[in-house]
Image (cartoon, rainbow, N blue to C red; front, side, top):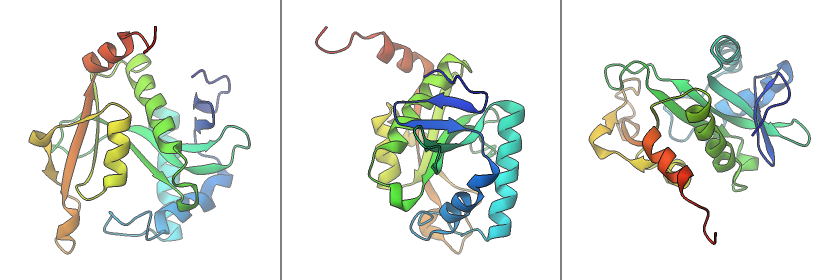
Length: 199
């Protein structure tokens, strides 16, 4: 999981997680405008809105080391989407300092396990390098594709912390309820301390 390149945050067998580059703007707009990718969000972004968010994400990663990183091919550096660790801004629903893991992938790259591979590496990064006490993730309750990833990377549901998302407008009531999954540091430590099966 070593980086080896100043642009790269994490390298896995197939993927790079890195800061955004100018050539990634078209892909970033694509994933923010695709109605299927954004099916569980109450909006689609225009090109100007996507570019503005792109600039904010790139600046945040550069200044803090956290954010929604570009997810790209380790072989070609082609961007597929994003996956990252970011501080939430949902107080008092989630306390200040809470770190979430999230992702978004261009539809043509669905079904290849890229998000699970990247997210698992970022969970390790969050606990090893950033010494986080916990990582959470949340999604619309009906977003089974995302909650399946959460389970695959070792997160468990925490129904007591499910919430109505304050930024989802009343015009989209079916998107307000969010389920929360979490993995605390002690559970990650226990999982990593167990010997691999067959040894």
